[in-house]
Length: 414
Ligand code: FE2
Image 1 (cartoon, helix red, strand yellow):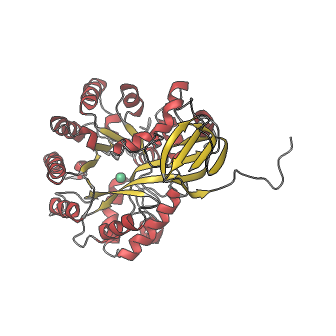
Image 2: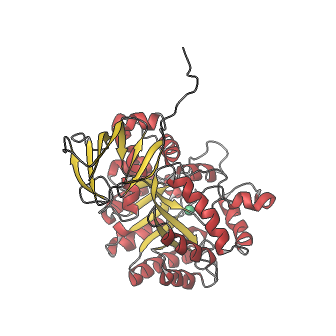
Image 3: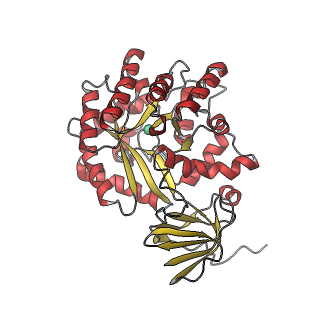
């Protein structure tokens, strides 16, 4: 048995110790008694591992790989057009190499769960094959969910629906889609029906790139929500981005939010990515590009933050640091009241876990795997304000990594 002591435990003021046996949390509380090994956490904040619920691991670092060909104005639709030329030359080893680099970026900064969208509008399924291998090879260190994502559309790309179905048969966990990219609303709507039908047929989760545009008439989220509400499938469904919902009329938005609450559908917002990509056609004022994160939180609609891109044609930056995503997100969504700050870390932990539909086995609860991270601070406010780094990541009771707090050779003396 192993005991982690002297911890500030997120959402549990009654406890300062975690007892671990056989990789599981055996007890959480105070004065839990002796253990074979005791680890003093020095009053630092312990939270469940970060979850990155939306990342494109087949695109990571491809912007740098493209060299000059990758240079463009950086709009969303331009990037979608640029991508097919590059993906013709993908190899399984090449995809794995870049994806592994990004996974290391994320794991070394406290992430233990990733949902990745993998482009399956490729009859060779090169990226999917690479990711299926990586999911298996890395499973002791990180849990990866794979979305069968038709980047070039289910209809815009001829045969796209069949490719998504084939990807599910090959082992993808989640059905994806991109209705706002289909060439007419009718095809976007058809794709939403296909997505839900495929999920039901193959017992898969759903995560749709939904309304990633400023156009308030892009309202595929309405149909997606309606279908999963009627099928009682909302908890297994996520609408990613829904940027246009940030531009929607209030009377429509509040009607829809009532329905989102009923369906229990999840939302993912990608603050850095969409702040960069959206509002491009606005002169001034410029929209922020985010969905209604603050209102979702107030209404009890589950919403999480995600990285989305690391150095790809859609977004040149990104380093897998979820605290950076949170920092950007809480500014853009204006969620910094004392009560909100107490819950903001949920946006990169518990809320993401609900999107992945792993909420029943995620978190600092007795019986769960002993997975948690130690942050360099002693309260949610402290770590968010300081954008604190992750001092240790523990998985099944063992260190994935551990580092020392920042040490100075010569300290500032004022
Ligand atoms: Fe995405």
